[in-house]
Length: 144
Image 1 (tube, rainbow, N blue to C red):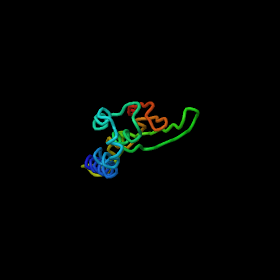
Image 2 (image 1 turned 135 degrees about the horizontal axis):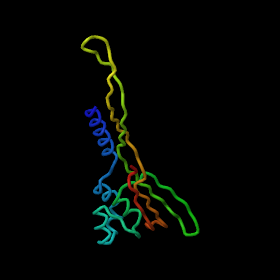
Image 3 (image 1 turned 60 degrees about the horizontal axis):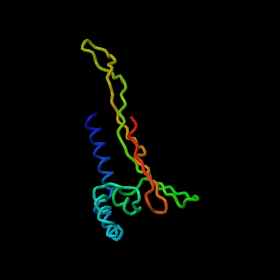
Image 4 (image 1 turned 120 degrees about the horizontal axis):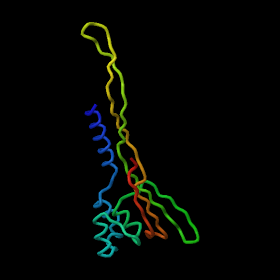
């Protein structure tokens, strides 16, 4: 069971790595935007940090592509919401039974504990942009 769990985790990790870009790839992809950043903003982006007032390009280079982008327009201008997802493996335990042979013949039921793991996702961070600039952001802890 543990081997199966480890193989499943390795598969999820490999699948996740295949689709995620690295900061170096994102800097190269948006080289003009990166070059136009101030030295202070460039240092933050290189460290994977964001700050209110940053452009969408700077946040993209720092954190990567969001899981979802939502937009709405109101009297204050165009608001864009970027949602980043996080994940964890939820553990569930339950009792199961199996048939075992007895030494004196016949069969008996033996109770054993089973542990299963299920991948779960949650909204890890919400970023609000107004007219292309980061207005506010917040992070969320993984539910437990």
